[in-house]
Amino acid sequence: MTTSDVNTVLASDFDGFRVQVDAEAERADIILGRPPLNVISMPQRDELRRVFEALDAHDGVRVIVLRAEGEHFSSGGDIKGFLEASPEHVSKLADNVAAPARCSKPVIAANRGYTFGVGFELSLACDFRIASETTLYALPEQKLGQIPGSGGSARLQKIIGIARTKHMVMRAKRIGGAQALAWGIATECVPDAELGSATDALVEELRGFSPLAQRTAKRLINDNEDAPLSVAIEMEGHCYSRLRASSDFREGVEAFHAKRRAVFTGK
Picture (cartoon, rainbow, N blue to C red):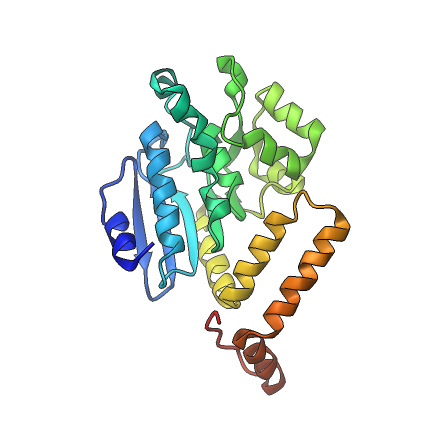
C-alpha cells in the first residue's frame, strides 16, 4: 500500500468509528464511536480491516490501540445485519476480524464494560488486552441459536483451553475483567479510571523496543502457535540469526555496554 493509498483510507468517513493518529507518539487509535453500546455493523467490519491494513503500512505508526467511547467497548454485532447479509459476505467475517492479528505492529485492545460477540472477537485478535474492572467478556451467540463466527471460540480455546471455552461458548457465560486476567485472556486488569493511563503506559513501553524485533516476535509467535515444538524452536533460531545482522541489534548491544537508552530505527 502506497503512502497515497494510506492517506486516502485514513481520510475516509467511517461507519461507527474514527481513527486518530498521533505522529509524535507514533501511535494510532481506532475508536469505536457508536455509544452507548458501540454495536458493530456489517460494513464496519470491512472498514476496520482496511484501516488496520493502512495503519500497518503507515511509517509514522509504531503501536495501534483499539478502544471505544463510553462505558462499553461493544455489545457485539448488528443482529439484523446477519439476516440481511449474503452467505459470501458472512464467510469473510472471520478474515476481517483477523486484521489485528495479521497486522505486523503491536495492537492493544482497551476494554471496559460489555465486550461481547464481535467486540470480544476483535479483542482476542489483538496482541494485548487491558481490561478495566467493569469489563464483561462474552460470546452469547448460543442465545440466538448460533455460534461465534469470526474466530471467537477458536482463539479463546487456544488461550483458556477446551473446558473453559465450552463454559463460555456453550453456556453463553460472561466473565469479568479479574477472572479474565486469572484465565490468561487479559494482559492486565485495572480500575476503570486507570484504563487510559494503563494503555498509554503499554504504548510507551512497546515504543521503546526495536520495531524490527517486535515485528519478528509477533510473526514468529503467531506462526508457531500450531507448530510442533521442534519446528517452533527451529524457526525461532532462524529469526534470531537474522536479527543478529540488524542495525537495531548492534545498537541494542552498544547501548547496553554504554549504559544508555537504545535508539532503534527498525533496520
